[in-house]
Length: 359
Image 1 (spheres, one colour):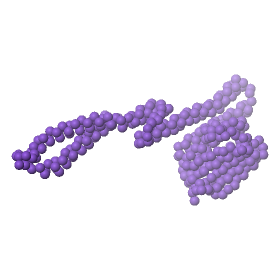
Image 2: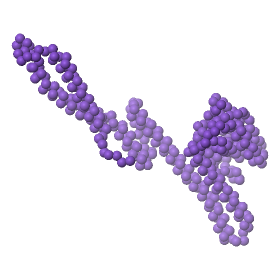
Image 3: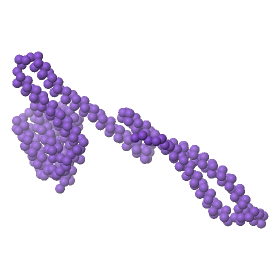
Image 4: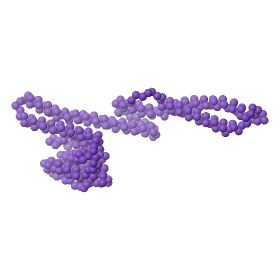
């Protein structure tokens, strides 16, 4: 909003310093007058014509006091202007960095040197904020680029199938419709995943008491046919683990974890174990699966959108859209919990979700 121009903070501090110095000088003179001159006789002849009297002292002291007050005022103005400039120099750097950030330059850092004080604490907090903003903007840009690419792929395939059908009217329409349905279903799944990810990122959730053990059983029951089809043993163990949150989002969280554990597993003879428990004031869901060994440096990147990882990408009907663990991470964060991923020495992954527990 537009503001009327006003005096600078440096000028205000300068006037404050000078005014304080002038007031201190006036108080000092008042103390001298009140406790010294009142004991001097007040007559024009002096004491026995020898000692100085109040009349002489006042006429001698007043001009010198006036000169001293003028010097104090000048020193207050000059010294105050200099000191205010020195004190506000860090604030000037912080203002310049804020303007640069407002113009889109998020890579600029203040990195103020010196001992810790209020201004350096402010500059460090500002640098931290710029770092987080830069990371968030870069993540959003990567997400937008990846989402555009992922959405463009099924649309381009649909366009290619329609062009082929237009050029070859004798082509089997049943096969064409089936392939179009598969491509369209993938596009719908991707769009719904993007909407769910956006919703969980906003934290727009309705909270209620949810038992994660029941959620895990429901997710396992839904995915049991997929596990049996792949020859994967799916086991749910543990006890009640209650938390406050969205039942829909928490179900999607556990479902994504179990589905990833089933899909990214051994070709046959693999296992998936889901365990729920209340531990240390937290409600814990632990999903462990067998599978191919994962490089330790790859694991932290699996929660990034559209990150499928080496030896984890599948090409069948359950290939997914690369948002499974990203959605899980977003839902966990929206519920104030933590997500931990650790590779198993024998291959596979252990995913542990900790959410605030309730009695």
